[in-house]
Length: 56
Image (cartoon, rainbow, N blue to C red; front, side):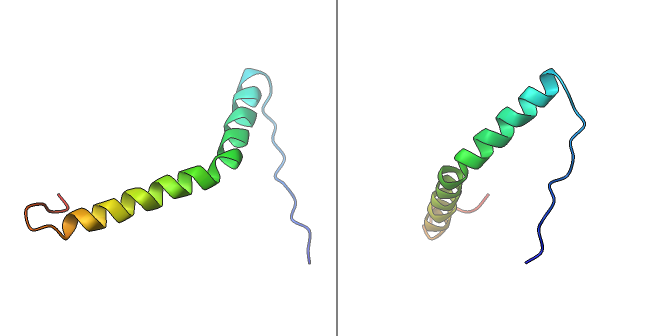
């Protein structure tokens, strides 16, 4: 397989720390976010099956 190169980042200082923090948080929480999104979508589909509610 071909190796994938990570794009070089030229930011520095406070922005770089913020960027690393967001990257770490997103990577560590991807499972929880996916679960939350799928549960919300399932609930929305169940609600639309009721006669007294709609999507909007």
